[in-house]
Image (tube, rainbow, N blue to C red; front, top):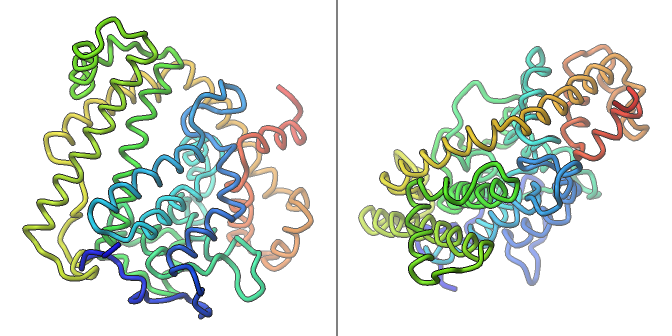
Length: 383
């Protein structure tokens, strides 16, 4: 496939921090994608929460892994339609949530509070730490030794990152500057919008399945109401689950088509001739139109009230928050509770509370929901 001039060209990559011989049959970004998929952190996403804690809910709900796969699928579709580097967009999409701790944003909020004295916690920065330091499988380097473009995309797919930087990102940027003040590549921007498309779509599905709201209530919302109306016109009397699916896949299509239409218009108008021209712009070029963005704000507000803050979800949030708040100080007070293969790192920071806190954070943030629950039971008993 011929890439657009504003796409990231594999031959123009800024390379890897640790030079490696080029693959004979994979581009640098394909190699990045494969390393991410084979990483330990990627596998652990299978048992990490998206919204519902999967160990105590139906296995129909999305996990952090299935969400990531859906994001990658959307990113590939949009990148291909825009003449972008599909492999880079996919690599950034597959890595974008590697830094999430157990229990989703609830776990992140708890760790942010616990880490406040030692530099805080940010899941995007933690993803950078994972792919540059914590994955330890290769003989020649720590991390995955990803290309500059993939690291840049992970770091700033949501836009430029202003100081003060999260310490995990600052460490990487000091060693290999990621131009954090500029826009991300178009491929990384695609991955970011694909994230929005995926969770807006699947959270509606999961909320319906959980009984937190009804199809009739969704039909009162912008975009979604029109989708249900079209399905009813084309398929009167359609069975409930099929009706739901047909309507929500139309919502999905509206979001993707809107992003592509806006991007195609803006690209034609600005006519960027390089990937760096995209980075130099004063705002993202891949985004929703203003009308759809406003409509999606109404949908997100509905989901916030009826799903993310639903009484049953809040009760579970309180329970898992307590698990994280128990585990972190327990390891800080007695680092010998950490596994044997972590003790060398502990010994290296002896007497340094900040260093120890960051090691404990790496360990707790890397846990799956299941492991965190079992570890809490081991240390504190059931109940």
